[in-house]
Image (cartoon, rainbow over all chains, first blue to last red; front, side):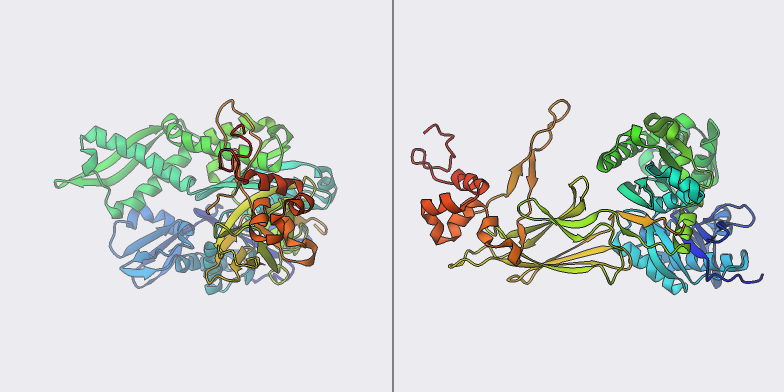
Length: 502
Length: 91
């Protein structure tokens, strides 16, 4: 296939826990190409299939083979590697230690190859999206993984914010001006995380007003909960003592894939049978799993998580200073948003404002591609500030400043107004100048000398603030008289992007 | 002496749950020329503890802010109960 020139295109990658998508946007024609699996037109599953002495297979083919090869020696499947990024634990593949970033790198390589071979795009750099609370370590690991695959990450964008850009920027310029003033909530419940962003479309920009989220309570966790129902039924039906029941490690991948299939089916069917051959072996007997699970069973399992999601939505609204009635659109993004119970809980809150986005699988990557095509760089939507001892906020980086690594570097000299307890407290947060509201993000404590010399001299404290290329705000604080300082990172800052030129 | 530096915030609602009305406060101030003299940013009782010149009650009354005076008076030992009772002992 003839390679297409990408100089005037934007590339966005949604590196998901369950599925990954590459999108390419051409600003002149306003067209976006989405690189999906050729056979199914669905996103590429983030599954890697390792085989002895053969190159790894990634995507749909790897996922399809789980049921056939997960139990066969010489085959190993890695799923949901995004959840392990930034954690020190390594994965065991054929007895060898494999870092999560190496697996992520294989996925990136596959996405790049697929974009080239199937769609004719040669990708060298892109904007990559991450969950709101994807921490600094995880972002650095993801960057290393991309680097190893020959991809440069220009910047990261929060996934729901990218979806918001993708939704808003599909409109023509004249429609865009009509959208000004609209408050939009993005509810992105995927395989690994729930990410909520409340945004506002202004005359010339899109602004994040609040972000909220839930980690590790998403699609993968729902599969696990559904699996628990199946396991309970199986144990009861076969009279197996619950404490003796354990699934073989080789069956786990197959069982998980079956639970996922069943979960997806329950969004459109009232009941589904979980079926798995050679599920359990005991006393030389091989037993198959075949249990019916209804949508009601599934909903009873996930109800407490759905309640928590509802609370997070309310919290996001409260942080944005809005009520549910002031939300003009509530966009449902991500696979777990297709669960009927989830749709229902959002309709309860937002009524007709709920929009089931037709391109929910790719809108995040599309938004990132548009941001890249128009060379949009995130700016701070609210000032990064510290709270001084008299309660007055001091802006470190002002709202509207571009979050560019070189520009976002500042040192502050402070003094401790009361060192009697041997601790200094630096309160860091986001400050909205219009509402004069200070939202606390961190209280960083560090040791200071508790002695009161005569004559008294103030304990001096130096604080440095740096926003790096991964959009992580790193804060280092140290008292002049102490060897030990304190270090912290904030990843959930709020951003705005300019719409001019779009 | 170890002190927990917290301040009270207005209580919001007692209807469904008791919310804390205490919050941790920053104890850092910018070390620049705009924030001089520094004693203005210290808690009132602490100013009197570390600056000898503030042991004179006339200096205290003249130079401390209203908030600092409140903080200072809360830690004066009561002549009656010999504790920093801030007038609550009835003396």
